[in-house]
Length: 354
Ligand SMILES: Nc1ncnc2c1ncn2[C@@H]1O[C@H](COP(=O)(O)OP(=O)(O)OP(=O)(O)O)[C@@H](O)[C@H]1O
Ligand SMILES: [Mg+2]
Image (cartoon, rainbow, N blue to C red; front, side, top):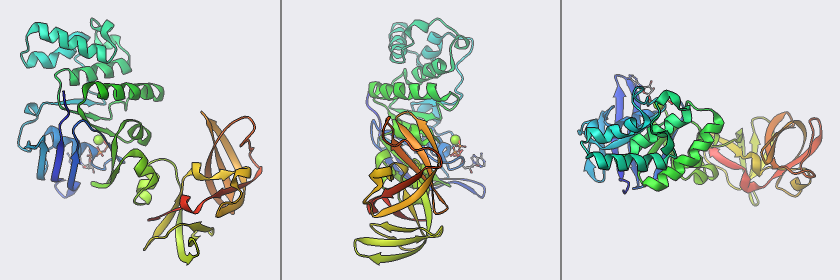
């Protein structure tokens, strides 16, 4: 099966005076894994609803593989869906649940059996075909929902916070499975989440939504390294952000005065109201901090260990800086209260429109 191309042309959605989605143009490529990321109420589900047909747009068109489906009813769009609480039918076995979409399509019995078995194998639950949903864990139920949504080979799969109800470990485990599943089925996936780490882990491209508008679209890495503005920078990953009071040119770049009273060097400025953003892992600490264009003496407020790295909060002239450093037994071991040197390059001080 091949994934379908999905096009939004001037799609908007209004509820009375509320604009849930401003006019939006967007093309999602065949077989792409596309994530919609944004705060609550930013229009993620509304955008999906335009594809399913359950919340038809107030203006514009939705095209699937070049065909205008804007007026096609939801049940005729051949789209698979997995939602946070997409309940399985409680009195049907796992097999019957997954077979259901095929039975409604009046497929011959032998083919149904073959397809259900293939789908269950794909989510690695072949040995649970005879169970009822309540005899499965939350993660297993969600995998069955995945199998049921994809058993008839839809070219488009929509997922709205499918892992939202699961705990962190299970979520990460299922992320790996969903990625593998996407490679196996080849469908175009639109995946809604407000967990930026999940979007970055899964998607080829991510769209950041804010208040019904697409703020920026890009690869997870592209968005992280080249955010268009402070909102995107703050939404994808951690960032030290400071309001900029004044920018002056100097040899090699610009000099910034932040509202908090720091003076920083950056490669380039921007017109209008600005913020400066420095990623925690771009800041060197200890001996490694010597020789950078930005160089400060500070005091460690606290240090938190997590797998493979240490996250420090460092007080620099009354400002709190987040610093993330690789950890090993000998390097980067600073305790609370320790005086430290921190530093970063001009290129790592991103000056962005506020
Ligand atoms: N039936 C409705 N009537 C009025 N306003 C609505 C309706 N459905 C959604 N909205 C509004 O449209 C906006 C976008 O809603 P949407 O459900 O798309 O957000 P979302 O990004 O999916 O949020 P969440 O992360 O909370 O699910 C919100 O401001 C919401 O209040
Ligand atoms: Mg939603």
